[in-house]
Image (tube, rainbow, N blue to C red; front, side, top):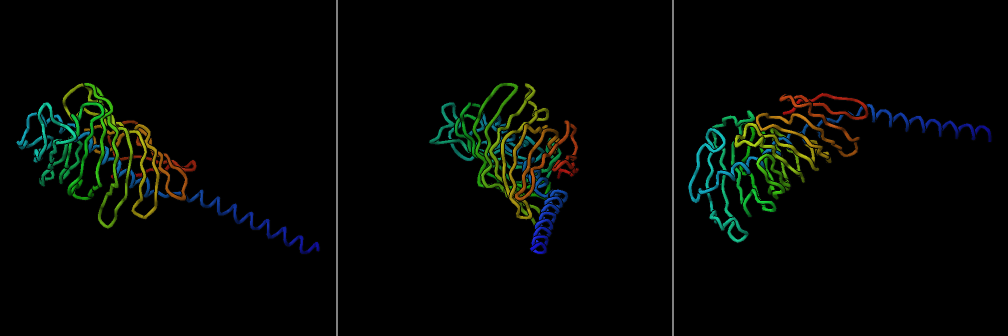
Length: 281
């Protein structure tokens, strides 16, 4: 009996050591970086599409069936498609629709990013009126000739409008970010605020984002995101400050820190007390 009892205690003790070791090792090797990188790839570009559309809305006044060239870039154009753009227009029954074409010359925009493809934009209510809606679709939309962005739609509701500050609720429906041999699934529900500095210039605008997102990284791992007031200046390619909490499935939450405002491609994330540097694309 004593022998059997001792053996049982030994087996139990050994099992506890084994379980503890496994847990300890899992914590130590929690360096899953792909979810953090892939969320940043989708977040940066999707967050600037709606502010761009709002700037385009300013150009729609009096366009009727006209086509405007060099609207925000070097070889772009804004084309009226259909709908009522009169003073009594912008209604649910006959909303005005425009197509913004970046062209194919691949000239860099104010943030140093070259974009090609088109935005399909429908305004249900005047864009700067609180409560109005905008529907945006992406057509062959590509960044720097490397990453293609697509989605079922981007749904926008105007929240506030003043000379210095404008904000919207923006939902990305079934977004996909695709590179060479990989793709990332992405959806989000965010509040996007643009600080215009009370000037008409796009170059000095600053985009701030809060909200939530979720997706599936290029390795097939699901992830959830909480966005805490990240900032992207219109003149910079990258998010420059703020934090994001990313939780990949079966891994611990990691906090991404985009820095203190410098326009660079460096960021870090911290998980289980370890801080890991990574480069923004």
